[in-house]
Amino acid sequence: MDLRSYLEDRKSQVEASLFESVQDDSIPKTLRDAMLYSLEAGGKRIRPILVIAGAEAVGGTAEKVMPVAIALEMIHTFSLIHDDLPAMDDDSLRRGKPTNHKVFGEANAILAGDGLLAEAFYALANSDVVTDAKLLVDVIRDVASATGGRGMTGGQVIDIGSTGRSIDENELTKLHLYKTGTLLKVSVVSGAKLCGAADEELDALARYGENIGLAFQIADDVLDIEGDEELLGKDIGSDEGNFKSTYPAIIGLEESKKKARALVDDALTHISIFGDRAEPLKLLARYIIDRNK
Amino acid sequence: MDLRSYLEDRKSQVEASLFESVQDDSIPKTLRDAMLYSLEAGGKRIRPILVIAGAEAVGGTAEKVMPVAIALEMIHTFSLIHDDLPAMDDDSLRRGKPTNHKVFGEANAILAGDGLLAEAFYALANSDVVTDAKLLVDVIRDVASATGGRGMTGGQVIDIGSTGRSIDENELTKLHLYKTGTLLKVSVVSGAKLCGAADEELDALARYGENIGLAFQIADDVLDIEGDEELLGKDIGSDEGNFKSTYPAIIGLEESKKKARALVDDALTHISIFGDRAEPLKLLARYIIDRNK
Image 1 (tube, each protein chain N blue to C red):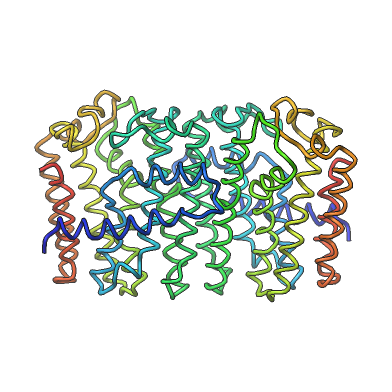
Image 2 (tube, rainbow over the protein chains, first blue to last red):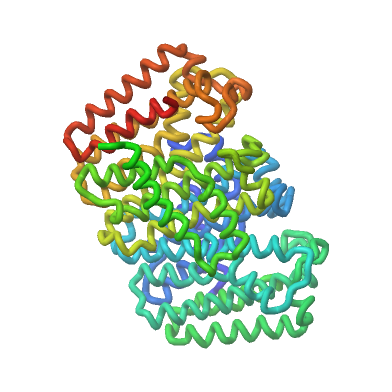
């Protein structure tokens, strides 16, 4: 299987649905434009592709889980818009383009983020491809939990409270589990859940999701030190400049790389029960720590 | 029926569930405190009480619809936190207390708003009192729609685009339908929908909700001119100071009062089909335009 063509194929499927979802005349034009601007700004679409790959591991298809896939990308995009705000990271560029508030103003950027968060739940609940309402309610609960105080938003608050002071490895791991891990885990699990996966299959996918979520973050910290600025799309060494704690700073660069590899190996063990159907998930796990090569 | 004791009774039921909902140790303490601060800041709890009164009109109970009731109050509270931000209305006081960002800082206030929006959908989907998953998915879709670009968030963007220029009555009505009307309508309808109301009952409640939503806003504009500052809890004449269009400015004060009364009368006609069960809804409609007396 060729990972590159798999990723390109799934990405264009996701983007078609994603861009269409906010093209609704009953949404005021300025807001539509602001939401679409950030949705179209690019990105690897890791979360929706994990939703689809999770579904495929249990015999499902992209079509059946597309509402969940685009909802997770909307939630990710909402978080980027709010992260970039002057009161948060105060970034003027994202993926080489002016950030949302630089183009639409701060008030509209706040509202574009709010709008995308609400649209995510609209996309989930307005779907006619999901037929089992009980499973859908379960997935909506999981996604809401991973987005709010028990997940990403909680992680942002922990991050703000940790910036400028040194924290230990346990605190750093907790921060990342909240900030990115929980939503990545939910991405992997939700697609499979909607396709009727058994409990032990969902458990295996959850373990895989936890491992690659943490590996993803460690790899990010490593890339921030030795990555290629152009490929990474942000300033190298920016974490150091903002006094943010990183894995290399706490446990060393070599130990960080070793830990990321061990987490990926463990992730692969968990999904071995799916056989060939988990080929995309296997390649994605490797891709996550090798993405700068 | 005594409206005052009805309102007090429902309000304390709602507040008990509302405050409990964010008391979860897995939500980081700073975020919990920031969310709770604004939830506890008071308010008439109009939206959750409408949810309950709508349910009661079709023979349902407060207990059966409490998750929807508190979700709508969380969404209302999230919108107030974001509205008060420096980039939006830049308010330092809300209901006589410092606004969220004055207490917790701007970044945490943005995240407290985001967190409450996500918690609203968590409350909806995590409920064990709602047993019909198909109806619940319907209600989640309606609430998401009324919150995002097709409702409140869209209305905020329209409002920002209209501030400082004069608009006509049609534009003003559209603004209010988006900004407050849609969410009030969904409040009245959702509780009844979860209790298995028939289509014609839901239609009647929707018409009632639209009418009182608009009447509420006209009454607000009238109160801003001739209200009692202390009772209203905000500066009298503040709309004029910000160059915001109002009904009295466009159609005159007396015409505005007449219009509000006509909307309420029409609302009452629609709910006459429910007989005595709609007594709370009847009293609430009158209360909305007389709240300063």
